[in-house]
Length: 145
Image 1 (cartoon, rainbow, N blue to C red):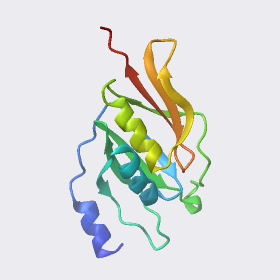
Image 2 (image 1 turned 90 degrees about the vertical axis):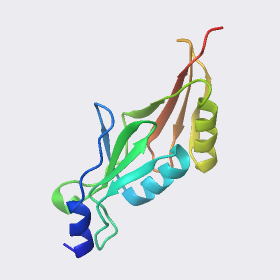
Image 3 (image 1 turned 30 degrees about the vertical axis):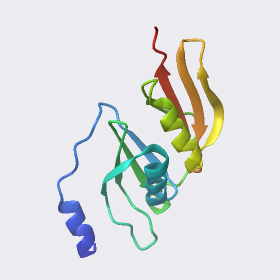
Image 4 (image 1 turned 60 degrees about the vertical axis):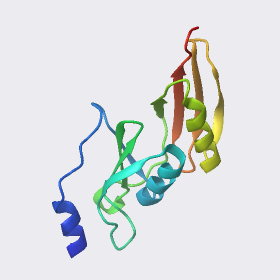
């Protein structure tokens, strides 16, 4: 382990926000974290330095008051990369901020899957896909007058 890696691991871990944390195995965790900074206003609070192959075993982000954790695949340790499927990351937002979040994500490069609209359950909701294949939804209650 390099001296920089050892120093990073000795730092106290940042506070985990939320009671259930998504931990995504992705192809290019540092690239994903950089994209989420642009698209979702993510703030990186911790990362293990990349290895010689550019992979990192842990990145901790804060997004919208919650923690999200990322890591790269390590097939030589039994953890090959698999395409994301069967889940959607959902951001719960306020009606007066959802347009800002949506527009920033689309401008950064997220693909619109379901346009943002008032749904049958009464909330504004839409779904996007990031360039790494992960589905994201945004939901905001519609305020009643």
